[in-house]
Image 1: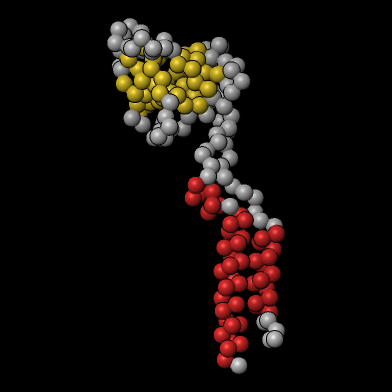
Image 2: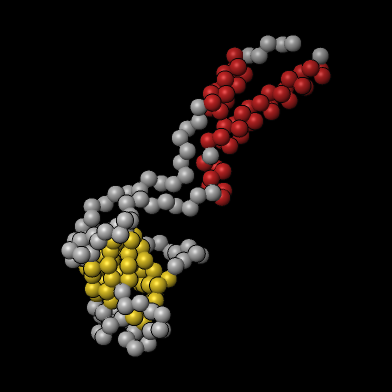
Amino acid sequence: MKRFSWTTRTAVGLALVGMLFPQQRVLAQNPVSRPAAAAPAEPAAAASPALEIVDVALSAGGGFSGQVVDGQGRPLGNTAVMVCQQQKVAATTTTDGSGRFTVHGLQGGMYQVASGQGVKNCRLWADGTAPPAAQNSALVVSSGQIVRGQGGLRYWLTNPWVLSIAVAAAIAVPIALSNRSKAQTS
């Protein structure tokens, strides 16, 4: 049996090290922390298929009200709130001490209400046109962390074990084929 060259031994060694000590798994981005009073940088991105939409009745004059709370349900006072329609800012305001806000001059339609890390999708109804199940205000939960969907192709492409096995196979298969062809020729 022939001895492996130093490049072959190094490649196999690196593949084994990669399998034994994989990099930290990265399935979700780290949340971006913003000060409570800072306005969200931009309107929220397009919604996913499993979108929750809340029907909210506007008061006279297009008044829309709501409350911003943290993940434990505590009101967040002095927090920036942005109301967006079709990725454009329709109105901005700041919550009072009890986390409540009111925006005037809106028309019926689909809106996204963003505050901190929380986003609420609302279907606003003009005064007197709302369905019976519509609420009078919206509740926006602003948590400190965002957990994005996990799984699917991204999971497999970023999984360190899968990557380690793929690298080891990419190294081992050509070596084995090369050794096999050398053995058949001798």
